[in-house]
Amino acid sequence: MIKGLSGRSLGLKLILIGGLILVLGVPLLFVNVLTWERSGRAAEIIEEVGASLGGPQTVRGPLLIVPIEFPQTFMRETERGEEAITRTTRQDLVIAPQSLEISTQLDAELLTRAIYDIPSYTATVAMEGRFEPSVINDFLPDDGEVQWSQAQLVLAISDLRAFKAPVDMVIGQGETPLVFEPGSSLDPHASDWRGVTTNLPLDPDEGFSFAATVVVGGVESLTLVASGRDTIAEMAGDWPHPGFSGSFLPQVREVSDDGFTARWQVPYLARGVPEAWVDGQAGVFQRADRASFTVNLTNPADGYAQVSRSLKYAFFFLGFTVLSVFLLEAISGTRIHAAQYILIGLAQISFYVLLLAQSEHQSAGLAYVIAATATVIMTAAYSATALNDRRKGLIIFALMTLVYGLQYVLLIMENYALLIGAWLAFAALGVTMWVTRNIDWYGIQES
Image 1 (tube, rainbow, N blue to C red):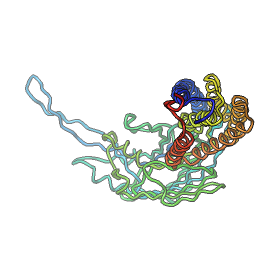
Image 2: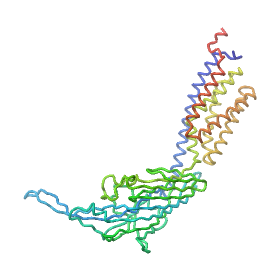
Image 3: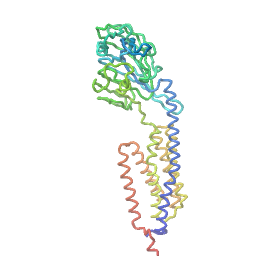
Image 4: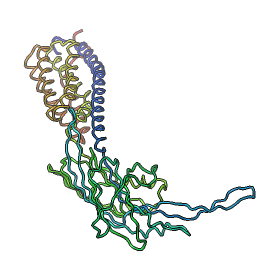
């Protein structure tokens, strides 16, 4: 039996400590809300800065727009009965390049607004490919007529403000760049494209090659749409932490501290979009947009993400710390008041507030070290006073150093967090069972 404390009083205190941990969930909830608020504010700043730069960009095209006209007969009721009325109907056919090769150089820059960092970039997108307008014959109705003289080329991005230079595009072996104007004739309800257009009268019997260079700016991510019937794309950038997403992941990628390179290949069948379609045809533009690949400028030092992940394990580590003090109380026989347990618990909650505040000014790793060190020292010093034993204060210091070290491991090894956390919880329970194995919880020996 442990001196100074009865098993009944220890059992009751253990139950009360469990209730205390649940009650401390309320201030933890407020820390969560504070984290969401600060994270939301950072997102607003990024959106404000991004709006002036065009935001995350999606580069689409080029696409060839060729009008066709054909007679269409309608029946109309009149006083003399039904009459046939023939009208000329006009439609725009959208034609994708037969082949498209994209080479992109992405130059990243970290912008600062107040205490927030915004990853931005300038991307030089070089495109080469070939159009075969003869595919239009498969869509031409009887008695239809192709308006070759009214053909247009369209390039589109998410926001026209992102253009950093005029579009430099030449046809065939030409040396004079085409002149683009804002806007396009594409169905505005088909997608959120913001297009630029140039007139391109065509020879119906010949295909043509093209070469274009587009310079765009943006923030956070760059998306390229596989606009060609067959598309090959390469990208190189100086951002050391790229994230790849979209419908197609790169087939080849290399990432280093100096930047990254990636290569995609999207064949016609994988693209899932016809090589030509009628503008306004339901869902085609949306499917075309989904045939894309994205490079995200991720920031591994995102303090808000680190705090959010830390809060996922807050109950576990809060309980571990309070349980450690309880076990030392049980072993030493020194009584610790419930108010002291509350203060020790609040000290652990203050760690997350410190982590949130420091992460807005330092790197994620340094912010964690500062917040954890302050919390461990304060809790260990207070525990030594509460237990009236410096040696046990040093034990608390060692235990908490281990606890916060393990918590940091969980943060940086997110894929293994469940495995590590499960075994930590199992080990904590096992230690508790071992230390309390001889406690007479019913107080039978005393009576």
